[in-house]
Image 1 (cartoon, rainbow, N blue to C red):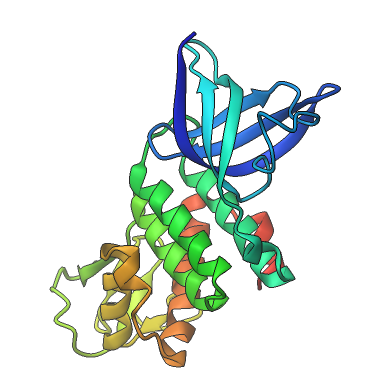
Image 2: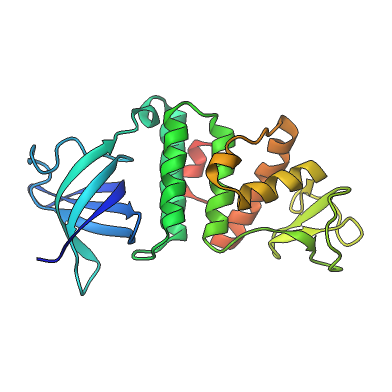
Length: 247
């Protein structure tokens, strides 16, 4: 039997047959996977208190050479993150985080940094972090890890490097900024102040521990929100279903 044990975050659970569960989970070493927990709805020994949405657990599962469905043998709870279910906003943001992760990372795509980002975001949300700031941090970092980093280095029109002076304009079809000589601010091309550009650049590049400590003021939050919203919708091609519960 070719079994493997991975730290994993439970993303989705669905009843499967009379007593089984179909589980989607994101692992640190094999990315997003799906597996069947035989007897998962009844077993109090192999899956005690760990097959629940958003939980972090050590999963033991059988590796499959063909197909994308694994067999879960057992799991041990590491962290239940009860704070994610403490109120509607936290629950909605946790669900939103899961949906965005599923879109950016198809089944079997390994990315340890994404697993760490997912875990760190849940830790911060569980501890009562500000949901508007946590959402910005996760969106910006997840999009960057998924290959959609916003280019904040130079103007996408004239190519002039951005020196951190004056306002910049976000171009959603280019995924980068433009100077005021090349583009005017509008609803679909929102502006960013120099401090906001600097902070957004650091969020995309810094570890979570550093990004979480950044002091985002109200103006920065107001400027970053529409930029990330436009960027995500253009690159992903649609609006996330869970976004309606947060906006």
